[in-house]
Image (cartoon, rainbow, N blue to C red):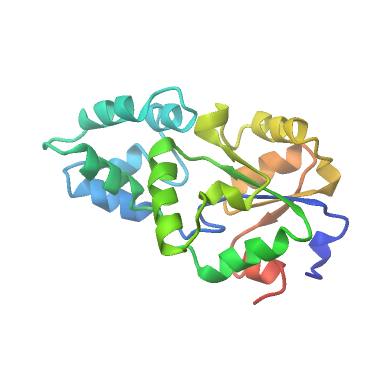
Length: 212
C-alpha cells in the first residue's frame, strides 16, 4: 500500500457498484426490455435516473410503492419476484480479491461505504453475500459504517451527502479518500475537500493498493 495517493490518508470511503462489486446497467435495461419497456434507459441508466428511481434511492418511497409505479411502465403482468430480479440484474460478481483487499485495507485505514442504492438491492445482495462468500454477517459488516442512500435520505452527487458523512463520522476531508467510478460523484467529493480516486480505464482498487 505505497501509492502516493494514500499519503496522509487515514479514512477511505468506498463506492459499492463499479468499485467493489462489478456492475452492468445494461443488464437491468435489457431485463426490463424483455418485459416490454423498450426505452428503459430513458428512465434509468448510469448517467440518468428519473424521479421514480431517485425517490426509491433516497427512501422516499417503499419497495412496494416502487414496484407499483414501475408496473405502470410494464405492458405485461409481472410478479414482485420478476421485477426484483430484473432490477437486481445490474449487480454482478464481487471478485473475491476485492473482498480480500477490503479486509486487508481495514487493518490500516478507517473504511466506510457510500452507495446510491435501495432496499431491494441491499436485501438481495446480503443473501448472496452471506451464502456465496460464506460470511455470517451482512455486507455492511466489512465497514465501520455503511451509508446507503435509501437509509440516509441523500444520494450522490449531492455535496450534502459528503458533508453529512464528514460530520457524522468526524472525518477530516484532508485525511479522507473517496473511491468511485462516476466522475460526477468524484467532482462533488472534491468540491468539499475530500481526496479522490476515480475508477476508470486501468485504475482499480487492486492498482491503488498495490495488489495488481
